[in-house]
Image (cartoon, rainbow, N blue to C red; front, side, top):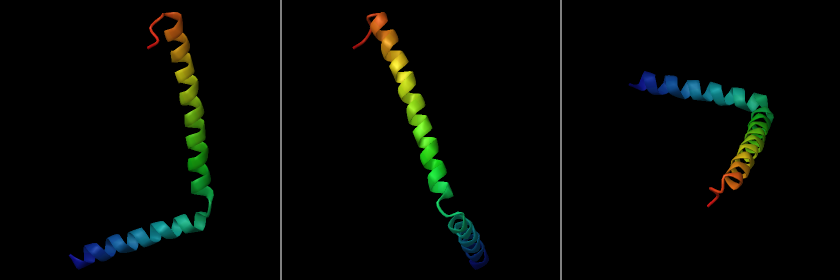
Amino acid sequence: MQQISFAIGHFLEDTFGILVAMGWMPVTGISILLTFGLVYWLNLQGNYNRKAEKDNTLI
């Protein structure tokens, strides 16, 4: 059981070491992905609202 715990600990330590070496790249990538997702979602929502107004189904 101790070997499994130490193996998981070493794996997590190596993984976090890689993240530290990457610096701000993961944060920047996630921020860009969230921004593009937000713009895409707002565009779709605008299309749905225009269609609902046209069909008189807007609540």
